[in-house]
Amino acid sequence: MKFAAFAALAAKQSLLPYEYEPAAIRPQDVEVQISHCGICHSDLHLIDNDWSSSPYPLVPGHEIVGTVTAAGDRCRLAAGQRVGVGWQRSACFDCEQCRAGDENLCARQEATCVGHMGGFARRIRLDGRFVFPLPESLEAAAAAPLLCAGVTVFAPLRRWGVAAGAQVGVIGIGGLGHLALQFLRAMGCETTAFTSSPDKRAAAERLGARHVVSSTSVREIRANAGRFEFLLCTAPARLDFITYLQTLKPGGILCLVGAPPGLLQIPAAQLLASQRVICGSDIGSRSAIRETLAFAAEHGIAAQVETAPLADVNAALQRVRENRVRYRMVLTN
Ligand SMILES: [Zn+2]
Ligand SMILES: [Zn+2]
Image 1 (cartoon, rainbow, N blue to C red):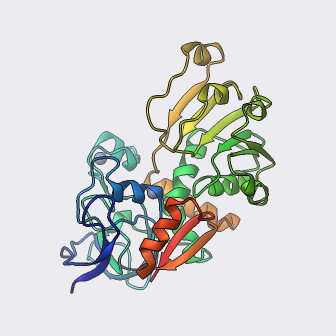
Image 2 (cartoon, rainbow, N blue to C red):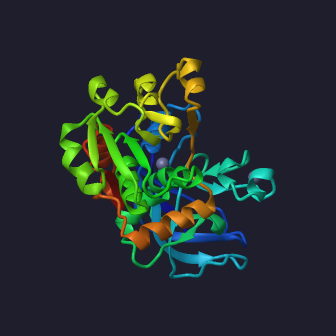
C-alpha cells in the first residue's frame, strides 16, 4: 500500500500530492496513522533548501501526532496507542552521546523529514524508539508542537537548571516562545517577554510573561540591565546581542534555540568581566521529549494553534511564511 503525502519536488516549490511506497516494517518499527502535524519554520527552510541539505522529493513535517496502526515484534508500542514524533527519527544507540542518553547529539542521527518522508502525510513508518506515547490529557492539535517547538525550549531550561524564582527573558514570541512562557510560568519563574510585535503584548502576558519589552527599543532593553539569570533566544534574527548580554546578571546564560544568520560578534570582555555564557541548544533527547510531554500534561500547557486540513497545506505554509499564525499552524487529517 502506498502512503499519500504532500511533497516539494524542487526547492521553493508549492507542495504537490505525492505517493510513495513505504519501507517494510522492521522489528523495531511502528506505523503511525497521522492525525495532526505542526508546521515548524524548519519545514520552510527544508522546502526552500536554505541549509543546502534538502533531498527532493521532500515530504516535510516533524511535529506529528497520530495512532499506531502496526508495530514490529521488538517494538514496545501497540496498535491503537496515541503517539507523537518529533525532528529525530533515529540514532546509532552506540556512541558516547547515545550511551549518555543524549541521542539528539548523535553524529549518526537521522531527521524525520530529511532523506525520509515526513509528517505532511496520512501515515509514516519509523523506529519506534523515536515514537512517544502521548499523555491522555493532551489534546492532539495542541500537543503536536510540543514534539519540536516544545522540547526545543524545555530541554535547555532543564539542562541549565532554571528554577523557581529565576528572572528569565524570552526573546521572540512565536511557536517556540509562546510555549517557553507557559513552561516558565509553571516552573515559577518571573518571565520577561521580548517581542517586536505590539499586538503580541497582551497574549504574552496571558501566556505567562510578567513583563513585556519591545525588542525594537534599545532603550527598553537596556532598562533591564543586569536582570536575568537566563535568556532564551527563540528569534532566528540578527539581534543586538551585545545589548542583550548586558541584561544578564554575572554568570548569566544566553541560550540560542533559533539560528540568527551570519556571525555572532561579541567583544570578549563582555563574557570575561561578568563570566557570562553564550550557548546553543538543539531539540532534545528522548528523555527530554518524554519529560516535556509529561510536564505539559501535568501543568495544562498547550500550544495555541490554528488548524488547516492537509489538503490546504500550501495556504497554511503561506500563512506561516507571512508570520500571520498565532502561534503554531497544525495540519489535520
Ligand atoms: Zn521543528
Ligand atoms: Zn549515537
